Length: 471
Length: 93
Image 1 (cartoon, chains in turn red, brown):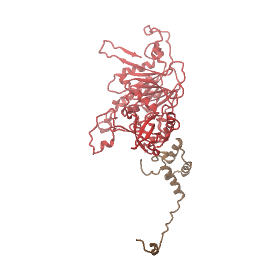
Image 2 (image 1 turned 90 degrees about the horizontal axis):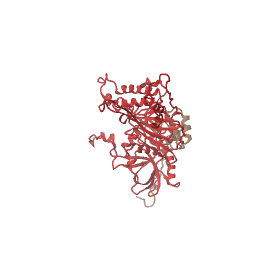
Image 3 (image 1 turned 120 degrees about the vertical axis):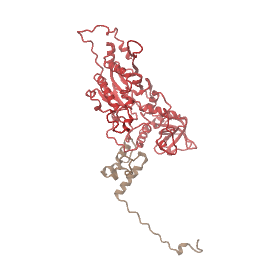
Image 4 (image 1 turned 180 degrees about the horizontal axis):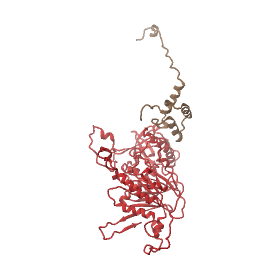
């Protein structure tokens, strides 16, 4: 564990007078092998003159063979896998298709502008599910309603699954069992000799109205760059090989929607809130990149495109820190191979979207769900903004990651899950730093994660303020 | 009303107009027809918004075995939009 490393050196070297002759021990930061794999999330020329039907078609094309294989593994080799147009009534068979959940409460622009309904504006809802939600399975040509042993709450629109059952008299399909594509194959984890850590943090929330977390942020930067603590702490910090910032580097308050709709003559002298915040971020990153490689992922409130996959933040916004080669500006679904361990993660938009449209609440359960469905963001493009892909769906997982994370969770959670072919994945829900002041440290050797939190006590309590860095 | 001792065709001769045969399709029209059939084939996914060659390549990548004659036809055609773009090329989005 990280806390054990810093406790290894006995005695506190901070209390002895500085030695003017010798420089003190130098700790070199570990350098792991790193290769970025986010190429299929980078978009070149973007063309929006296509409909979204292509994504669903390619999703089904790609997942159908995988699901047929899983269905045969689960229900026997002789199971009949049928297209919906060939269904016979009463025959036990298996169908493969995309799930569609019909929700009454789903916000619909047509209902809003329809004059017949005269709808009052809806109150802001956290979840759009209700008891009357209907599940429908669609394949290339037809769709069929589902009923039976299937819980509408746990599924979201856009997930591709295989269902076993029979069609009954009134045209609905009675479900007896279902199966998902489950985890893809994983390259085995290499065994490392020494402990190495990767720091995951998200939701820094710069440019926000309250600066409470700025001290905690500065403590984090000082800890990682080795300027905090005595020799034990510094040698511990030298084992942090990389920092990944998973989105929402700017706070939500920098997104000023009114400025875009107000008349230009009123907004002439005002500056967008994000300009100052990006400057703060650049200065913060400058301190970090001078010492450790940093991967910066954009999030929901950052100045990049809204649709997934979010493109990297532009390097012209960071004039001070782009001079260092250690700064990597990456896409939103982020994939990289650090010391042959595969990292895959998002800034949390896919997880919070699934949370709104299903009965699942825990971020880790949703992460596990997406992994088992073998798809990063099944709700794209239905309720989550997405680029109209036509060739391939890049959100389908080809290879199983070793560490799968999502940013901006309300609190820290992590869990290890096992796959059917011996895969081991560490799921991490990275907490939002501006509210929880907690970041995560992933140990590459043991594939475990621990939180690291920075807190400070306010001056009102005591005469002197105390800084507390707890593991 | 049937006549008593015969069929009506005894009094009214059968004069059948031989239908003129439709003009044989030119090679270009035949090729365009095969391409339209390729567009409407449900196995290869939606056809709107992308070029025919892109759709062929997508089908090939996903292992759906699209017929090779279509690809040869498209490569021979060059830049003619009637060959390269799909059936609904005049309708935006």
